[in-house]
Length: 406
Image (cartoon, rainbow, N blue to C red; front, side):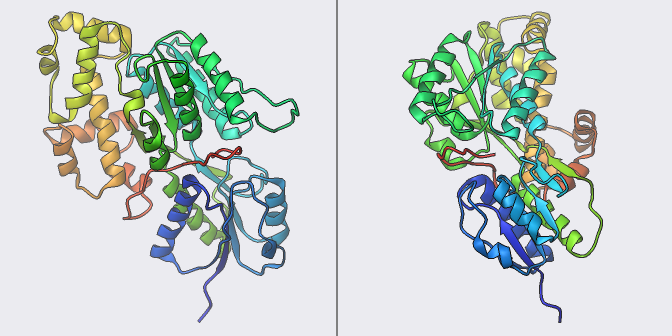
């Protein structure tokens, strides 16, 4: 019997995002393995393990984020798949989470809460952070909205290094105080989100009423340690790892490359206290939006919303269009469909059960509404978003190291 392929996983084990990639690889192996795995404990940006130089394996999955790792992978001459956004080896197939889709989801999350002032705080050293910031600002501009961007301070030494934590906090505090309020701030990853929360606290700015903060990665430990708990976009990291394993398997079997890169859209937003607000001065609109957020999946109608506020349907419709750019009915439908997507991605519930849990009286209506919004059927969406029967855990985290996640 032919021995199983020997595969090196040059993926750090020090942060939640990378570990989710490894969970995705494991999910693929449970269905299609086995492989003999070579995995060294490492932090982000670490040099490749010494054994790679003389290693006689069959393939590599790597986060190619430094020139040293790029040289080591290239020197092996083996089939490889890159799961980093750095793109240091353009000839190696690349799989990553979709930063544009993440940014658009973040923008809509904050817009739906009534914000008209926005900021982005990332880390300009990294491709993924720049892409998120650009896409966030572009999406808002399409709705006639501006976005302020935080420019990180640099230490006197310059170069690609980063200022220390306290220096960044001071600069963040000055930036946040100067922003028009209330403001919704999109932090490029969860550690940045924690910094924004701390800078807001030091500046005596109330979160989320004056400053709402949204991160990326949904590192549950970090988000729950935050004060208040941090809302965060959930990237589909486990799917990325799963598809990386599937692609490497094809390459090791001599199959063709399936394009230069694939991007995977986020699963949704884990809403916590840092964005649990309706940032509109119109208290009747605020009441209506909050009621919809809390009860849309109970099967409510616009008539139920009108019972909560002393205004006519015509007035309510006009206020929704002016402040949120959509009707009350569209707002109800949006909340329901977001929940449908989460249930399709994270559970094996049949569509009829999902319809019942999200306020749709008929499966057929859910199916039509879902396809109208996404351009695909619910079954196709589920098949495309779930790597295996194992529910994907929320994704990309970071550590409090200078290099950040990504």
